[in-house]
Image (cartoon, rainbow, N blue to C red; front, side, top):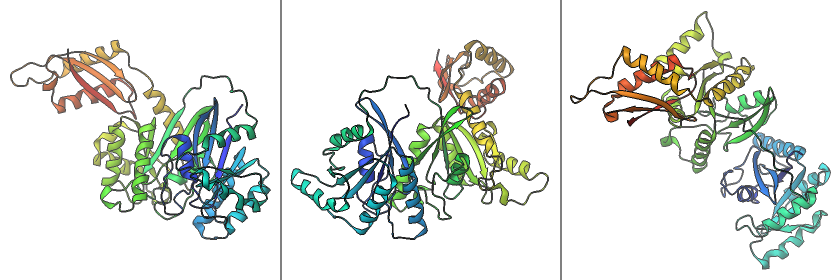
Length: 438
């Protein structure tokens, strides 16, 4: 049986994201007193009484506002309700009912889905009588909770199971983890456009305004029968340029998305080219030991000649030599040019990163590498590297045992890495060499 989906809807600032974070026991959605922080649909999974439940956090629903942003947020909330098995309609007990609540109550009634009316901000027993004002909606009995302190959230989850008709927990099954592909880059390089193009639907809100995406948004897709999770992230700028705390939290979410990903797509804008901040993002991904694919987006906007792509590629590799070992793709999320290569390359890098290099083959290669160019003597001591083995994957760490590991120069370490890459296919994977005492 597929996992039940529960959509949390309500007008802005009623506590949807606070409740969502409490259910997941982590700060997944950004929460702030400012209205309109959540924009896209954010998915999270939790276990209650042996049942796996998927919750969707949505942006604040403002029926009467025709602003482009609010219209897009409203559409995202409607999509969430459309795919949900149950709707949690959340209202603010302290503020009371509003015209927006009335309009949304009508929409919940008309959507035809099972629902629970949740009155938030009932922080103590004395505030439970706040629920009575919402009988005016003509909906089923409202439930008081406090998302902030967790009061009666367990009772609400019990009611969710009851509404969904879930009694006995399903038998446990071994699920294989698929590819988790994070899409990162500077603001406005087309991360959300690429996500939507790969999904072939508008999963995230796209506007010309930089900073439209704030949270890290998960989207699931089947690619040739393989489970793939695309993670659309907020744009990364220099820390010195971040003045808004919401953007700071967005940056933290993006960094966490990189840390949790198997493979990372680093997007740049073809018109703007490869800059210092792009290099910083690539450095961060490599430092975390993640598989990396470098993607040049908006290639349709470039005037092309015979060798335009080759020249562009050589310029990037000249500016950042480390990218020699990583795939470069030239795409257009708008026209869908070559976007099929993104998932294809992502899976190639992921499957490559899952393999451990044979110790015998590694040592055979090492012997040839050292015989061609032995390590230079340091401080009057001869350095001998005796043995190598891959001790880790994700990140790929190769341990090399030597008599004087601290005397191996950085230049010689780079030489060994480059030579090993010629013997073994580490394309798209950072390789870390760990020199140890034999």
